[in-house]
Amino acid sequence: MAELLDGNKLAGRIKMELADRALWLASAGRPAGLGTVLVGDDGPSAKYVAMKIADCEEVGIRSFHHSLPATASQADVEAVVDALNNDPAVHSILVQLPLPAGLDEEAVLLRINPAKDVDGLHPTNLGRLVMGTPGPLPCTPAGIVELLAAHRVPVEGKHVVVIGRGLTIGRPLSLLLAMRRPGCNAAVTVVHTGVDDMGAIVREADVVISAAGVAGLVTADMIKPGAAVVGAGTSWAGAKLLSDVADEVTEVAGWITPRIGGVGPMTRAMLLRNAVLAAEKVSV
Image (tube, rainbow, N blue to C red; front, side, top):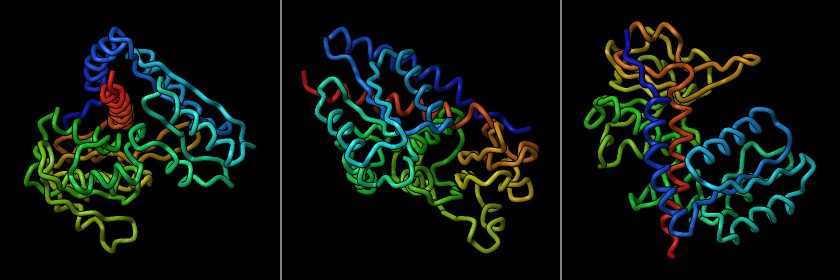
């Protein structure tokens, strides 16, 4: 039976450390501030932002929330982003995606000051990742690396297969894992659902990370016995959250993330870390 990669437990420890740093910032008269923008009434998006605001309250980060109707124009959304960029009390900004149809998401994200990019996905910050220079790391990839390291999963010098090439997880994660840094320095292969006989490639991996968003995509016969398996992709069946990783994989893997409480809490913890880091970088 695989050892569970418990993201809830690790995220709790990280939040305790961040709370100490946030308290120091507040005592110095410059409390950390996160601005959040929600456009429309999408249920999962609203829930996600609410969780972020609750996380901030728990750690001691001030929240500056802006909720706009689904009828908001491009100019309306960009005006809110501009206001947050110009507000010295706001050190980081989260624009919840997806935006309603008709809005240019790329233009909105590009408008965020890279120094306030809490998701680490602004082209400037992705460029820093490519070059190996300091900058806010994308939250889910950073959380996955931290989760593997905390459970002493061997990664350095090992073969890691990342399933999925999306902007938020697959692409930046593959770059991060290949870098010469602690917990990374791996041989990384990126595959996707359009690859012929994907299972044959996945079976060669010491670590499998699936971020495709296809329920049950990774099955037990695709996993090398003892490999670490991370389900970073999710989808919904009604109100039930589904993982890319089928339940039976736990019988083959050496380590595995739970369907709930694995990658998700780590993503949120890394967002909080980026928010605190952004506040710490601001001069007194």
